[in-house]
Length: 550
Ligand code: 5AD
Ligand code: SF4
Image 1 (cartoon, helix red, strand yellow):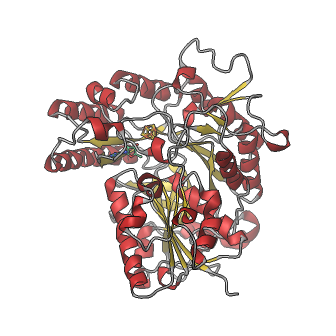
Image 2: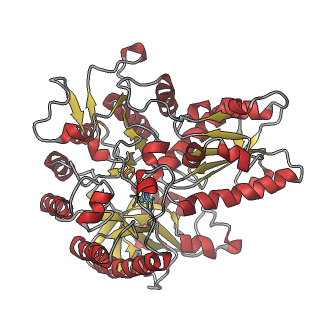
Image 3: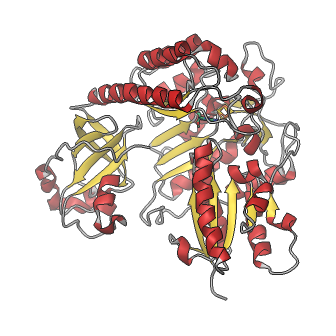
C-alpha cells in the first residue's frame, strides 16, 4: 500500500510546535510520510491555537478551503488538533461536517487511532473520531491513565538531527517540563484547553536532555506555562517499572513562605532542575526556559542563572498590565510593585539579563489611567521586546462570563499602536547598547529577508556547496536578540546553520541587530588554509527591514 502523505501545519505557541514534532515522530514511525503541499496530502492536520479569536479565525479559514475541496469530491482526511479542537469540541463537526477528526492537546497519543477510524468507511461513530479531555476531573491528586499515555508520547520522542523543519541540520530542541496551567488568569483559555498543571519527573527531563545532546543538540529550551512553578515532590507518584511518574502541580500555595508542601519529602525545585541539567549535560551550550511567572521567582533560580555559564540570561516574564486594578481583575496574583521588584531583583543578580514580556491592552474596564500605568511600566522595565495583544474575549474563561468586552476596538487599536511605537524606541535603544560588541549567535538559517528574496519566494535552499553569492543569515544571541549577518560568497551555509558563531555587532534596528561574522564557518579541522579569507568578509550594508521578528 502507498504510504499516506500528511500535511501538518502548526499555529500558536512553542508548546504547539513541540506537540507537532511529537505527532510527526509518532506518525512517521507508523509509516506515514509528510508533505509541505496541502494539495497533495491524503491527511491534512491543523494543530490549532485558541488563545485569541484571531488565531482561531486563521485556522477556520484554512478549514473552509479544505472543506470546499471535499465538497468537490476530494477524499482528503481533515483533522483538527490542539486547543481549538478542545475548546469548541464536537460543535465543530456540526459547523464543518467535512472535519473528520478532532484531537485535544491532552489526547495526542490517540491520534493514530483517530486517523485509522476516519479512513475506515462505513459504520464509524462520530465518537470514534473525537478525542477530547472534556470535563475530566482536573484536580485529582493522581494522574489519569490518559495523562500517563501522553507522557509516553514525550518519552517515545524520536529526534532526527539531520532533518530540521527546513530539511537542514537541527541543533536546537524544546523539552517540556510541565503541561497545563493552574493559574486561571481570567482572560486565558489555557487552563481549560490544556488542563491541570502536570509536572514531569526530573530524571525523565534530564534523560531527555541527555539524549538530545547525544544527537548533537546544543540549545535546549525548557517549556512550561509558568516554568518557575516547577516543583516535583519525590516518592509520591511511581509509574511503571518503579520510575517516578508525572504528578499534578502543587498550586501557588506551595510557594508561600512557611509552606509545608512536600511534607518533609525530597523536592526538586526549578532552580534544582536547572542546576542538574546544566551539570549533567555540558554539551548543551545554551539552556533556556519559557515562560516565567512574575510571582514566586525565587533568588535560588537567579543564583543558578548567575552561577551556571551555559544558562542563558534571558527571561520571558509577562506583566500583562501595569495597573493594579486591571491585574486584580485578571487574577494575576501580583501587583505592579511586586512585578517591578522582581525585575529589579533579577537585574541585581544578572545585570546583563535580557527581558521580554507580554502585554494586553483593552482588558474590560481598562481606563486611560490604567493604560497610562502600563505605558509607565514599559518605560520603567525597558524590555528588549514585548508581545502586545488586544484583549480578545474567550468563551469559557471567567472574564467572558463576568466582564463585558467594553473597550471599543478603536480604543484598543489606538492603545496597541501607542505601545508598539513606544516599544520600538525602547527595543532600538536596547539593541544600540550592543553595537561594537562581539556576540555569540546561534545561527538558525537564511534570514527571512533572504528567503523572501529568493526566486519565487519559495525559500533559499541551503546546500553543502559554497554559496555563489553572499547570503544573509539570521540567528539569536544568548539574550534572544535576533541578529542578522552576511555569509560571504564561498562560505558554507549549511556549515553555519546550527552553530554558535561570533558576530561583531555593527548596527541596531528596532527588530534586529546587524553584524559581521568574526570567524569562518568551517570548524578548525576543515578550514585550514582557507581561514584567512574570513578577514575579507564584507560588512553587511545597514538596510532596515521589517521582515524580522517573532
Ligand atoms: N486576549 C488577548 N491576549 C491574550 N493572551 C492570552 N489570552 C489572551 C486573550 N484572551 C496573551 C497573554 C499571554 C500570551 C500568550 O497571550 O499576553 O501571555
Ligand atoms: Fe494563561 Fe495565566 Fe496560565 Fe499564562 S499563567 S497560561 S496567562 S492562565
